[in-house]
Length: 469
Image 1: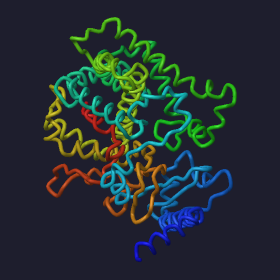
Image 2: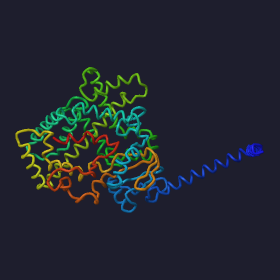
Image 3: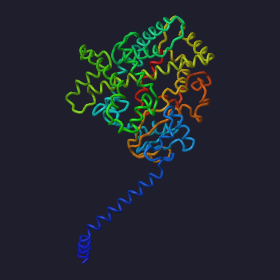
Image 4: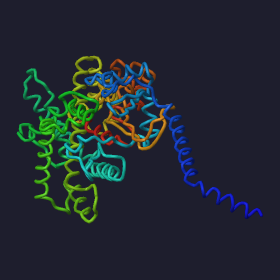
């Protein structure tokens, strides 16, 4: 009897399957909505958004880090903005930035995509390293870049010799000014660029080389027109990120990206010259090593080792290594002029450890705690990269108790970390003692994040050795 009753009930339900299905679907959607609503109720607060323009009027695009710091005083260290139709989350302060980029690095390891990237040479299987989405291609290129640069001397004696040689050329160029006032900007750029060129292209260029000077001028033009959300990105490009439909206006892409195209053409010329003298059995530099990987990858469809990615990766490495180091050295000159007492201590330690009869060596760093502290303080106080490269959440996550959904663009205010009043004794003063202990020995500070941290910090691993000139 029980079996017959069960069969009868099932048959009765079968007559109402459509209604039952609809009811279950509505229930599932309602449950999902309530679940999402609960999560979104913990979304970071932020200023009121206006139609079409979002909250962009709240930001000073010349000094975005200052705007972020000011907004954090009202909304907290993790707050939200709206860029037209896109949601952004801004992270301020050491504690919050550390949680995002170090403790939950994989959650925040992705990069957002913008239509302008296509006009900068990026495309399928060609994302470079800095702007690449988090995945196999990024891991492959990052691993290759770091290992290859180490093989060609990064942190080794061979690089030290190149740096020492280039420092000699720089000093000669400065002496040739014979005490006259001059702007050291381009001389420093020449020297730093040549160190990077020796790693990537296996050669240096004379300071009066017209092609080399043209390339440096193009880089300078691209990097320094007007600072925007991103370091090394102009305000014009930021505008196109915010309003991508402007790219459809005839002539706009050609006008905006003219300098970028010339840079890539110059890189293509260097690669072409490399191919004519390339010997697979003798790798001379980073470009040779990449060409070898391209040959290996020809049998693997969809590999990130291809000609287009070669030009992008080398351009990124050149830009990252040159700009940050050159900027640090220029700040160093300024701070030494402004603080003669610190300059005296720096020179005193140099004379004591190195003397005046030989060139500096990398092992001297261990015996020069004050100089090491001064270099770190220059990068902290100078705000070399006040706002980090854009991140994007790789999956749903939480930050400081707030819910951050997958695919959210995240901005890290690195300046707020380097000036965090809860971490630094004198955050708004040039104070090398931030990096010295009671015995005058150098100490690493966890809050020293001048460029970034975590899985996407590609640049930071190989720039800083070139500072030890």
